[in-house]
Amino acid sequence: MRIYFDENFSIHLKNGFEAFQRGRPSEEFYVIHVTEEFGRGCPDEIWIPGVAQKHGCVITQDTNINRRKYQWELCKKNKVGMFFFKQPNKRYFDYWQWVSRVFKFWDHIKLTSMNPKPFGFAYHPFNNKPVEL
Image 1 (tube, helix red, strand yellow):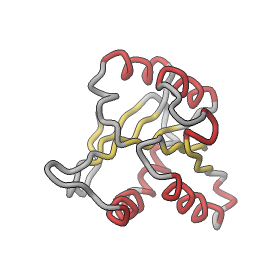
Image 2 (cartoon, rainbow, N blue to C red):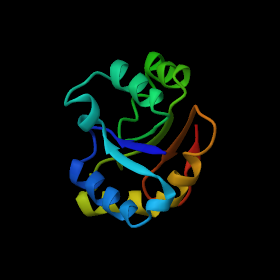
Image 3 (cartoon, rainbow, N blue to C red):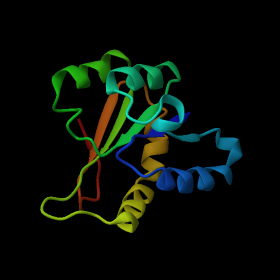
C-alpha cells in the first residue's frame, strides 16, 4: 500500500513516518510525499488520478477538497482514499502537534487504507475518533 502526504504536510513529517515503516518491511506499506512523484505545485487534477493509478491513499490538511464538489468527485471517480486532518479554529498546531496527531491515528490509516476505495475520513482537532465522510 502507498500512503501519500500532500504538500500541506512537511516532507520531513513524511520522512519520519517512512522511517518508522522501514522497521516493518513485511507490511509492504510505503510512505511518499506528493512532491516526490508529481513535483511541487502540481494541480490536484493531475496528482489525484496519479495516486489512484498506484492504488494509493492521501493524507491532507486540505479540507476544501471535500467541500469543492468537482475535486471530491475527482477523488471518488478515481477511487482514492482520503484522510483529512483539520486544523483547529483560531489557532494552529505546531509541527510536533501534527506529528502527534498523525501518529495517534497511524494504525487506523494503515488498516483503513486496505478497504475498498473511494472513502474519506476526517480527523477533527481534539477529537479521538475519525469521522467517515
